[in-house]
Length: 64
Image (cartoon, rainbow, N blue to C red; front, top):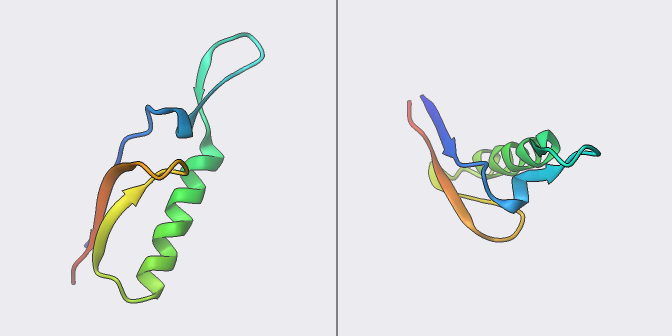
């Protein structure tokens, strides 16, 4: 089972749209998941989830 949990409420995952509304940056979420895919390819079984600013925002684990 692959389990990924991370919070997307901080500045690395949020932006204001043209109307001043807060919205999720889907590209930042996708970048984070792609980073985790690289860790899995390298053979890591688990680890922290880091945002683009270097903050730990969650964790992931891969178990068979």
